[in-house]
Image (cartoon, rainbow, N blue to C red; front, side, top):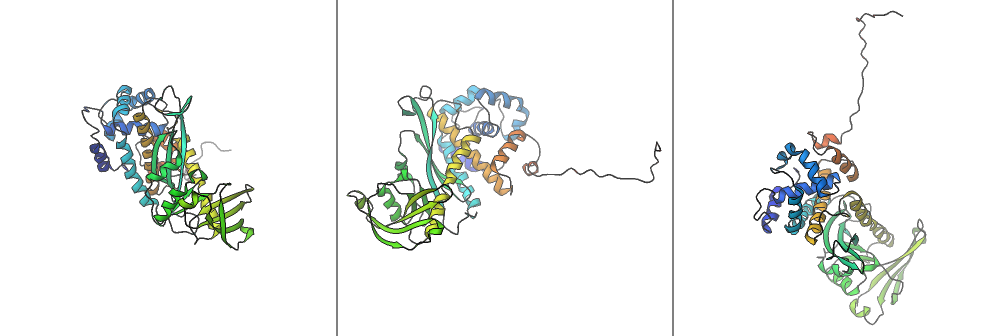
Length: 378
C-alpha cells in the first residue's frame, strides 16, 4: 500500500464526497478490504470478513482502525460512488504509463501502439436485472484501450452487454501519430475517417464483402507472407461518402496458422510486413482479458447492484496497476502472475517486498577442525 498515492486518493474521495456521514468505515478501508480480496482470491464477503478479523492487530498499520463487517462492506459497495475508484484508477494509469513508456515493443517503431477491444462478463439475469444482454442472459462489457508497451490499460469503459463495440470509439480522444489496432467488428468508416482527421493511424481487419476499387499496387516479397499491397478507394454508395480518401489494403498469409488476413490502414509509410506484425500484436489484449479473468475477481461479484459491480471491477483494475507499478519500481523480473501468487500467501509478512522475490540459495559449509578429537576410532 506504500505505492498508493494517498494524496490523489483523498482527492478522488473528496470529489464525490465519499466519506459523507461515515463514522468508522471510510473509503480507504473499503479500498484496502477489496484490494485484499483481489490479492488473496477471496470468494465472498463472509470470506473477507473472517480473514481480516483474524488479522485485526495488523490492520492498524494499514490505516484501518475498525473491525471489518460484511454488512458494512456490502453497504459501502452498494452506496459509495464507483466513480471514486474509476478516477483513482486513472491516476494509477498515468503513473504506470510514465514507467512503461519506454519499454520495447518488439517492432522497430517509435510510435505509441494501442489495441482496442472489449470482453463480455456473463451475469445471472435474475440477480443482475439491470445488465440485460439476451432474453434469458445478463452480461456487461468492459471496453479497453490497451497500450502495448507494458500492457497498460489506458481507457476502460463498462457498459451493458447490448452496447455495440463500435459506438465506444466516440468516447476516445485520439492521440496524433499513434496507432489504433482493432478487429473487423469496429468497421465504421465514418468513425475511422474521424481518426484520420485527428492525424491518428488505424489498422483494422477488412471484411470479405468490401466494395472497393484498386488505384495502385506496390511490389511485395511473397516470402515474407505479404500477398499484395494496394492503394484503394471505396465504391459503396454510403462508404465512399463516409471515407472519401484513399486507403491501404494489405493481404497477408500467416504460415503458422495457414490463414489469410486482409488489413485496412490509413498509413502509407510503414512497410507491409510491419503492418502485419502490428496487427499480430493485437493478440496482447486478448491475453490481457484472459489474465485478469483468471487472476482477478471480476467474474464473481460481492454485490448485485450496478454500483457494486463497477466498484469491484475498478478496484480490481487498480490492484493490477499497483502490482505493475511495484514490479517496475522495484525492478522485479518475475511475471505478474508469479508476483500475485507470492503476495497471496505472504501478504501480511513483516519483510520487504523485494526480499520475497529474491532467491537465496542455502549453502551448507562443512568445516573440519583438525584439533577436534574423534570419539570413536574406526
